[in-house]
Length: 233
Image: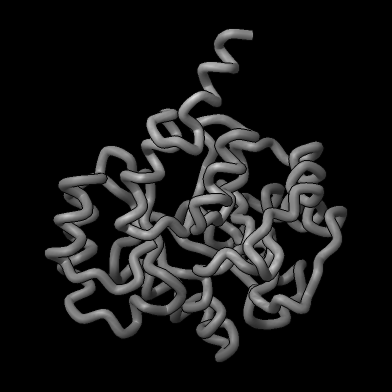
């Protein structure tokens, strides 16, 4: 997650961590107030790393009935990916799926499921239903909401994983179709132990990409003997 890096900071991140980054999200609506956005996007493009704008920016356009204007923004910046979300506003789900279907003709779509409101608890069956409908509408991957802090959606306010929710989602939705937002180290460790080194994790801070890679490889205490035990069985 790029929350407002300069182009030079993006270059530094790519130099040290680029081999471990599949895609970059410009967090929430930070792209709208980022200076020299074109220059930074060019840095990512040259490195072969796709970029998408945070879902909150999409919602800001939708709230103002400016979907076509949003599509023009994607073209203006030559973006290949986009996020469709409804975490900050109430949106009819059929309408959300319509947005996904329309955008798939233009870009690769990631759709986010879950509310940014910590008081709104969505039951597991509903998560599954929403995710499946969005995948059927053409979403490349569905994102499990957690926010930057990792304290809503998939997680309790303490940051603890709602493990029953995750396990139930996985009974119906293939793990490779889900990008789990997991900004906290303990959350990353939990998902890697459950689903393996290649699990899709998002909302990773730039300075946490390398530490996360060591967790994936069993080169940090948290997973040091986890994979060795698995191999010895």
